[in-house]
Image (cartoon, rainbow, N blue to C red; front, side, top):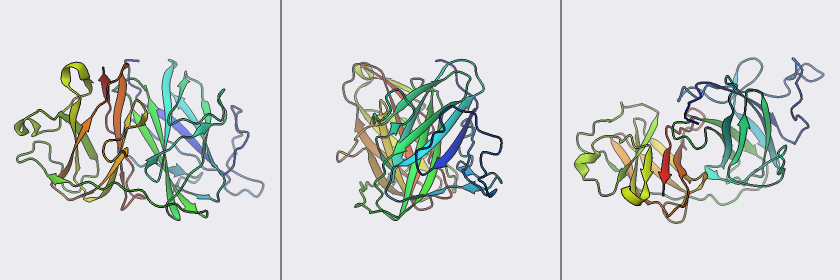
Length: 314
């Protein structure tokens, strides 16, 4: 898996109950019901273009990012296709209100088994997967983010994120927060973003690195714990101020970094940054580390971003 997939076409059909879509071919007019009105939605993206609009498009080409929750599990059927005949390892993950959740795949051999990440292989044929999610929203307007991962053990693999905004007509739970402070960017920081730039960059530096060595975003994409150490600084910034939540994963499981929570909430001002100490645990096998950042003050306008992964070796 040393190659990088350039383009992936994903089609998302939104359904509020599990349907028998399976692997059958859909008719050309699948989006219309008996009255000719819209029945489902579809969605496509190119994960090689970070920052491009991602969401659900109806048959008229308009961006739609909403559905409804009435207390029953939500079901989302995703059709993943590639432009390669080689077998490519994919994975799905899900956030609900910015928190990683376990979910199941209805049409897998282990249907009903809940996990934070469900891997599957695409080998040139369209693959349909129905994600079953039992959400616990903390507000009457909830969020579901479906993360699509390519080349799951290649640090140069790609990501896509499907943001779905949910009108919640069921009960709500108490919101969970984990606020942390920011700091000023290092003096003469070489990679200061332009003001208004929406991308949220992140990188790692060793906690032992002197501050003059942290004047730029590092390009570290792999770490060997036995030689490089276990203690690191997770650093992140953006050119656009706002309320952010960053969610951490290690080996495709939620990775608690502070206060036993796998996420932090931070208020970013321009020329500020997040600098968060993290300690990696002992591991026996290589594991992937990455972070997802969600803008919480204008989610409808800006998509969650995952710009890189770091492969952690024992």
